[in-house]
Image (cartoon, rainbow, N blue to C red; front, side, top):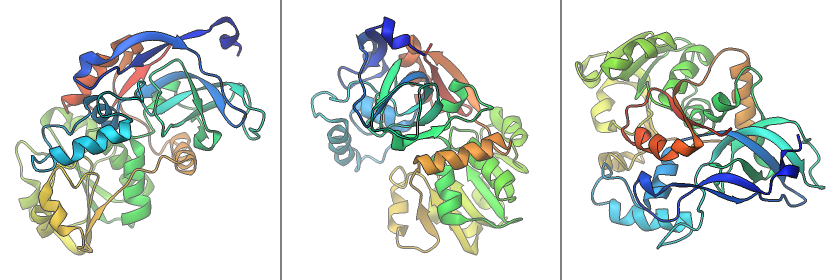
Amino acid sequence: MKETENKRKMKAVICPKYGPAKVLKLTEIDIPHPNENEVLIRNYGSSINTVDILYRLGKAPKRLFWAFRPLIGPAIRHSAGGFRKPKKRIPGFGFAGEIVSVGKEVKNWQVGNHVYGYNPPGGTYTEFIVVSPSTLAKKPTNLSFQEAAAVPGGASPALSAFRDIARPKKGQKVLIIGASGGIGTFAVQMAKYIYEAEVTGVCGSTNLDMVQEIGADFVIDYHKEDYTKNNKKYDLIFDAIGAGTFSKCRNILTAEGLFVTTNPVIRPKNLFHVNNSNFRVCKADDSADALNLLREWIESGKIKPVIDTVYSLSQTAEAHRHYETGHSKGRVVISIN
């Protein structure tokens, strides 16, 4: 594919300053050139992750406990590269596309390879990206580019929770809080079809059928039932959205059960339990090895991304606004044609 030979400019969404979604602007910039140890990818898809929102805001969200917001804001701006405005002007981390140019020192990848990955420096809301080959994994053959772009950043926290921390055994009871979200939908499928657990999903009333369709044995509407008071014991509680607290859930855990959360800071009471052996925090693993394992599971039909909405690159601000409502069913994806 020689698309870059006839183009010097590419479309990209930039974040010129911190603020609400409207600060995101579609523009044209120069196509980057890979160094000898890098590859250039024609990018066809990205997805919205919480870190994208934080980098755009330059501060902690309002739902974060008030005492932590002044502390988290400077850390976010430091990570984004600037205190007055982000130096990393192009948001986005997940991607899926086709290699169009390979540096001389790159050995294991070729022009034409279909790949997906998570680029730690960011910059994936654009038509072309330069990445390190160590971040790349082969794209699942049974997914479109846009579907593949939904995997990095979404499946990775669930993978870490199950593979690295909980390791549930066949038949064990797993409760997933936020089962209809971008992380939760992957978690439901992994718990059911990879680890063969008995899965209970917690979500809103409009998502009950979808969560059951992707593998949950039982579904709880949190609007109608308090899952912490149903007298059922679970071997694992995975909080995919940071909505629960260990103190409220400990009474529905088995003696050796684990409460695993993706975000302990939203509920500050959780910080008092960081040394408790039943309380754990998972970190996302978007390494090439992790993405290759996810590809195997996807190609075998055990898991698949659940897509809420696909937006065009020009609709990125709208995609951010939709994600920030907290009501998406699965992943919010950006298609880059």
